[in-house]
Length: 320
Image (cartoon, rainbow, N blue to C red):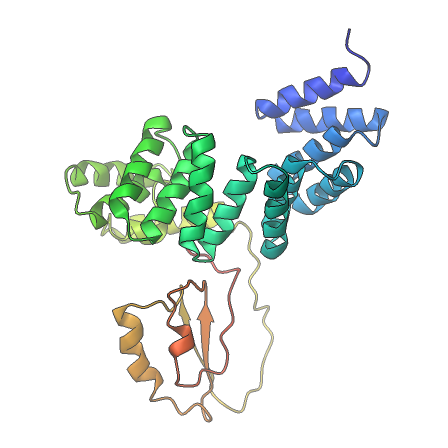
């Protein structure tokens, strides 16, 4: 016979497992009404709130759970997920490392750590974490997809393509796997079924399905209409309702200011060609700004000597 507390907790966990998050939230709240210090309910309700885009509230609940039971490895990983969603990546990494110090087999901590390292361009370290996660759950599409991304960044496209093919075999509807696979195969000179894959990706974009990242889609289709459609799909999914930073303010500057925006100013021919232009700037008369969307390890930013006045990292910019 289940107790009055165990019954709603079991119901909540069951709903959570099957993705019925609204029902799970209500059941966890019922548990906490009966016992405000039930650590599992605090932790798992925090996870639900994080999954439903309320990471600040989720982090607060998970911290309350950890205050009661500080050695919950999985809860530390869950707190890392909430902090990562809030953009507090250094704190998130600390949480993932703390989780792994309690148990090196916490898959969520390995994946969360791998994601942040991958976004920072620390691809070898990211791959090590993600491969460890893949060893623990070899049929998880998300882990394999992230492994593929890391391999692609490490210029190992054939291995990346193999990862993406495994993802597709496990889940043909997995977001962006069609484009990622084709991109990797093109870089590995695997042209076997290019036309069939191209048509499949274009058809998916027409149907508003997330088939390819916008920059990847440039290598798939010459249709301006489809390229715009792909970019809008991506922006709606990852940058919904983003308020414009400029609100109509008027500025009175005594000098013209010039800004250059790049995904990362990485080492590639365009960057070096642009350096000839940048060196012509009279920076005292026209201050130059470089807006860097991401800063990977192979960025040429540190070597630029033409005197850009300001190099912000734009974390709110949308890039695939």
